[in-house]
Image (cartoon, rainbow, N blue to C red; front, side, top):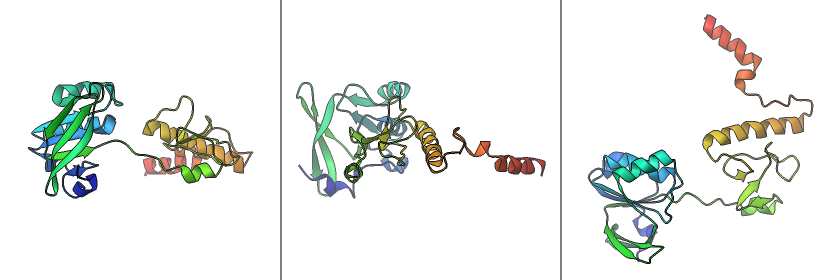
Length: 211
């Protein structure tokens, strides 16, 4: 098997930056999240063929988009990429294996897109004494960690009932900042304020409207 690094400057991709680049080509996408599904849908009308390979039967993506994807492109589950075969500087074949049956298939490809998410590097954070759970920081509904005065938000942290979407991260960030404000200034308002709650912004908005 050729090393994946050998093809990163040719036809092995980790992002899709220009749809037209894939026009008329045979594209393989490896992944099962929202990004992989979205790329499959966008490339379906551009590429010659699109094949999505995912190691699980279920996708970690919006149900509606998954249904649309299965109508438009070829989906192979539960398969995972086993080998990359190169012809010079480019991948020309990909070997995939069915995790349930052990079946092996070789696919001819022009372009390969890998969308496996990311791995958080949290070892240094853990050494600071923060409680970790499955690789992310544990917090409560106020963004508080186990260390007094340390607050967190976003994908690096988790709590019961957390919504793992960017909208949820925005909300968590507002709550964490407000909690930090109260920690520094205990007499501060407990409600999590945003710019639209600020009287200074209201005055500026009135001035703009009247102007």
